[in-house]
Image (cartoon, rainbow, N blue to C red):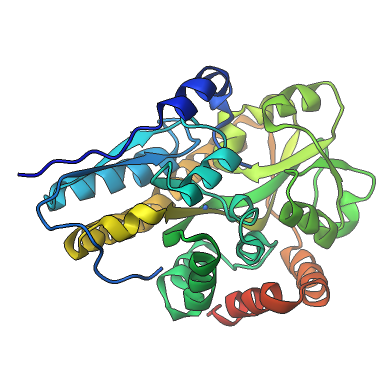
Length: 345
């Protein structure tokens, strides 16, 4: 049997591994078509799959690992080798490496991918999706076809699937029940164009702090609050330095599974096996996330030291956000936003 291994990008990994492994505990970022490829059916190929999550997070154990296991079970001469915890570089570096073909598969948030194709960042717009199922249905159906194709046309990279790693919520030292409660609150948002638009849409004053510095910034009062999915809040122990979590659910934390030019080197059978593996992960991750979230909410509620605010006026936030994006998006960004909203059941 003919055997071929993908070139391992040692220079990228070794130059960035040490500092990035030290930051790995951050728990990740704040993720088309094509017919049969050019590879022969019996050619052994090893693909690298990288992400920025720790082994115990759902994106890793229910996402990346499921993809690797399902591909192995398909027995089509394809192996997926996982590099988690940012071993192959930070998000921005890995996106560029996928585009250039120096790295094969990655799990990325839509905002990070917006750096190479701006319209895809709209996936991370506040209240664009009603829930995790809405996001999965959008990417699993025809509604996302134009976005996927335009992304591939612009970058040469395929979007194989997407899941939600949980809704993002506000934590602060006071409840955030309505947009007016954000007035005067120094709320940390990730420093990307879409996240900063989200802050404005929700009525927040965004403050820029690196994710790895956020715990200390909250502890020292440099910022008053932050927003993240519960999985990240737990991973970073933010409940130790905040008084409450307000369940605003203002954004589905997207994870998109992307693959670079190597896609066209796979045989049709290998493409089908990889696509099916991603579909299996898309099915499993939300359930893993939901289980973790419910366990943690129950623990916080029982403990009483970290208030769970569950009477947030979500309608007020959602109406404000929708009005903002309708007025401020244009061109393909507006088309993507409207396609997402129209796909809501």
